[in-house]
Length: 585
Ligand code: DGT
Ligand code: CA
Ligand code: CA
Ligand code: ZN
Image 1 (cartoon, rainbow, N blue to C red):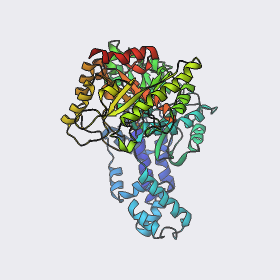
Image 2 (image 1 turned 180 degrees about the horizontal axis):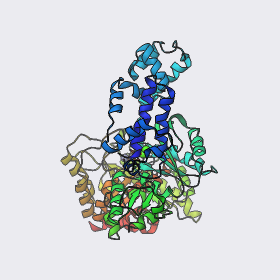
Image 3 (image 1 turned 45 degrees about the vertical axis):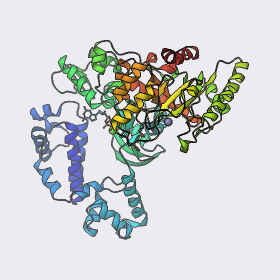
Image 4 (image 1 turned 120 degrees about the vertical axis):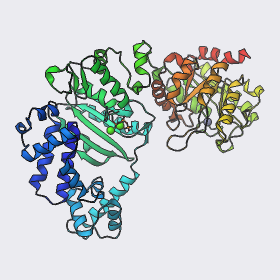
C-alpha cells in the first residue's frame, strides 16, 4: 500500500475517533502522522523494512504497529473494527460544508442522526437549530450545504470548466509566490466532459498559495485544505483540486496529474524498461519506487521527460493512450492545428432563420475579428421551429449577401460573406431543397434535425444518401448529440465516413461546446480515409465566433493538423475546393 493511501486511512481514523469522543491528543496524533508520511522523502516500504519508523517525529509504538500492518498486509484490523462500530452514513455527512466531526458527534448522540437524509429532515423540522452550539444560522447553512452536494455533479461541459478556471489561473499567475502554474487533468487534455478541474502550481511557499487560492471569488465552499493541497467547489457546482509542489517537481507533477491514467501507465512502463522509475515527484535512476533526490534525473520541462523516455513531446490533448505512442514511435505526430489558423466558419445562422444578428452585423463583427469569410447557412423550410427559409427566401437572400459583400469590395477589403444553406436531410435521405437551388449557393451543409428514432441502418443510409448528393459540401453535426442532454441517434459513423471519402464530402466538427460533433475519437479514422474536417461555429449569435477556439482544441484532440481542416484555406483556395465535388458529377 502506498503512503498516500496509508495517510488517508490515518486521517480517517482520527476523524472516527473524534466522532467517538476520544481524547483530542490521540486523534491529533493520527493527523500529524499522516502529514509526516505525506512529506516523507523516501519510500515508506523501505522505512518499514528497515525498521526506521520509530525515528520519525511523532510516531510512537501504537502508530508504528498500525503503519507496519497497513504497509505489509494492505489492511488494518483496528481500522476495520472502528469503522464497523459506527453507522456508515456518518462519514458521508463530513462532505457537507460546515459539518465536522464534533457536530456529527452531537447530532448522532442527541438526535440519533446517522446519515444525510435524516439530517436534512431534522433541519427542516427545526430540531437542529435548538441544539447547543448550532442555532438558526448553522441549521440554514447545513441545509444549503446538503442541497449544494446534491446539485454538485461530476460531469461538466469543457467550456464551463474553462470559463471558471481561466480567471483563477490568471490570478494565480499574478501571485508573487507562484513560480509556474497550469491546469492539469481532463481539462488540460481538452476532454469534452470533465469531472473536476485540476490546478497545479510550483512555489517555495505552498501555504500562502493555498490560502490565496481558497479565498478566490467564485469559490462557494472549501471541502479540504492542507499544507500543499486543497479542494473547493466553484460556482456552478464544479469541484477544483489544487496542488502545490516545488519548482523542480513541477514538470513531473504536471505530467502525472495531466494523465490520463492510461497514458501514465505506458509512460511508467517505458521508464521501467530503461531501468528508471517515473512518479509524480520525478524520474529516478532506480529499479524501485523512490523519491530520493540523489537518484533524480533532472528534467526542467515535460519535453525533457518525454526525451528521457525517447519520445518527442506529446501534446496534452493526445494523452489518452489512443495511439499517441505508436504515432510518436513512427514519427507520425504532426504539428497540431492552432485556432489562429482558421480563416472563417462555413455553418452559421443569421436573423433570417433562428440567428440573432443581421447579415450586416455578422459581417462587421467577424471582419473586425480578422476572419476572411463567413458562410450564412440558415435553416431550410422543414425546420419550422428554427424559422427555416423557403426556397424563395433563400433566393431572396443571395442578392442581400452580395450587397453586403459589395460594401467590403468598395473599401478594398477581401472579406466576404458566402451564400449557403443548412439543408435538412429528410427522413428518407432526400434533401429539403431541389438541386437547382443548391447549385446556386456557395456552401451547402446537410444535417439531420428530425426523425431521431430511426434504426441505425435507416439513419446511416440517410446520411450516406446526403453525402452522395453532388451539391452537398459538408455533413453537419453528424450524430445529433447534445452533450449531457441528449444521446446521439444511432448511426454507423465509419460507414458514413467511408461514403464521404468516396464522394469527396467533408465532415463538420461542430464547435458548439454542447455538440463537438463528430466526436474526436473518430477523426483519426476519417483522416486515414482522406476525409477533410471543417471546424464550424454553427453560430446563432455573434459571440459564438469564440467557439472556433474550443472546436480547434477538440480537433487537436482528434490529432488534426492544419492541412486536414478545410477552413484554414484562404478564400481563393477555398472557392476552388468548393467547386471540386460538383465538377466530378
Ligand atoms: P476527470 O476529472 O474525471 O474528468 O478526469 P481526470 O483525468 O482529470 O482525473 P482526476 O482529476 O481524477 O486526476 C487527474 C490526473 O491525475 C489523472 O488524469 C491521472 C492522475 N491520477 C489520478 N489518480 C491516479 C491514479 O490512481 N493512478 C494514476 N496512474 N494516475 C492517477
Ligand atoms: Ca480532473
Ligand atoms: Ca481531480
Ligand atoms: Zn443544425
